[in-house]
Image (tube, rainbow, N blue to C red; front, side, top):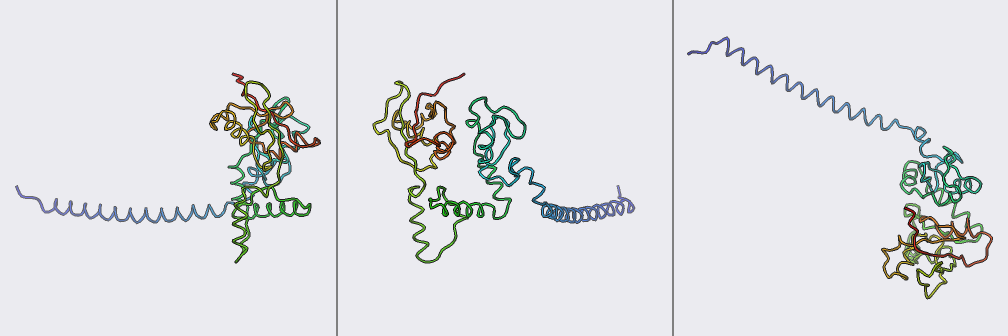
Length: 268
């Protein structure tokens, strides 16, 4: 059976038409994709920092978050110094006024490292300026700077100064502000340590002390979660530094800072 010429021409025209449509569609997709990428890029460039300010500023001082600290109960975040000062006379969240804890609200706040990193990345030169202000504050009072200076805030120095700075970085916090503490077991359930008096950096946290006690008492650092540390009969939060404990619980008392440890109470 012979094929009709008209039908052959119709099929070839159809194939040509489809090829043209596919080619045109591909070009159209490329134009749309390119324009959408340009649009997205344009949208990203148009985002202003002030639109994010409500999320990265402290509701107490109205400034950008410094040492961002979050209330565990409601997850509202403030500057650490602002929140601690507020909780000296109150036990509620400054934003939603929920009761954090009836008697020990400071134990239910936690340093929010992720939020602080976000703030430092979003706000130009905020971290460098804050470190500079803190260093000037301690320098005017003849006190050593108690914090570790971030790498991106260290001023570049040439020649011999660079080598000396490397040596200073390896001092294992010996140049930090130091705190004298007395560690004693509160109950006979845990043995007393042979050396009760310890001198260490003010930046040591309660978690560091728990691990130290677990190593000395249980000979197993992994058991640090089984220990509570108390000051003035109050259980200390795991993220509290010794500097924070001294300021809030041992401000008008003579050294050493007296801390007691005991087995963790199971309240479940």
